[in-house]
Length: 277
Image 1 (cartoon, one colour):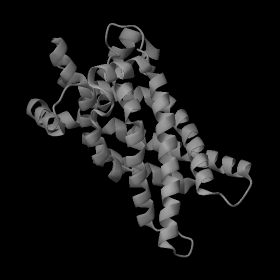
Image 2: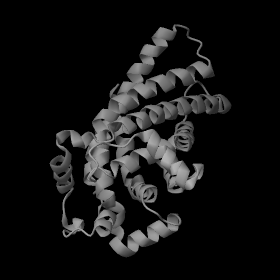
Image 3: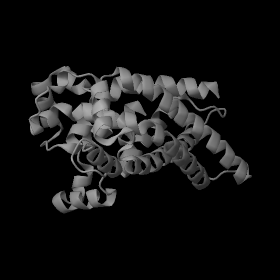
Image 4: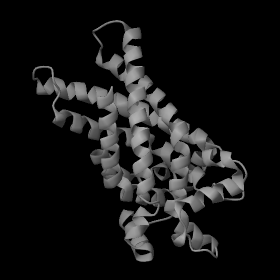
């Protein structure tokens, strides 16, 4: 459905413009020690200025996110249609709707994760490069280097497959996250539509509210998976040759900071979640 592709692409472009600075702050809070959201914002601005919040550059996400989001929605709609045919009955309960949406969303997330992993990996490196540079006291100031320099550095250290460093944790996050989001979206939309009444058509307000609430719900459940992914991928240029086990990373977080540590950085994520979904 071309309308799905166009709508998804437009939504992706809008979400990049609105959410990119929040995503940068989220990654910094997940991977480095800050006392609070305001502490992270203040220190980032003091050291790097406004550009610190757009460190990865907004052009690459604009080009890639549109394609990835359109692919995600296309795969989801196709998978959902196939599951509806498999279900057979025209009377789909709310529970069945949620299950169908979760499986279709999981298929969509899995398909897109393999495509998006290199882009997210490079984005994380760019977002954190000044912090890493200061900590490791490297000679070359990364602020003067283009995005392509990060790609070349990863390939130099780990070969072309290094661009898929942390793919396993990325797959787990996107399978669970995309499945949870679409399940929440479809169920919330149906409930809100029944409350709204009308002639069978769902208003734009219902779509907006369902998407926002589903985004918040999704991140509250899957944020620890995103945290583990970020911690693994930030070390792609470290000495260790293999990505650490995700379970071990999560256990280390709980051991050091308790279960609250699994939600480090969630405040800015929830602020960002409603409007961009």
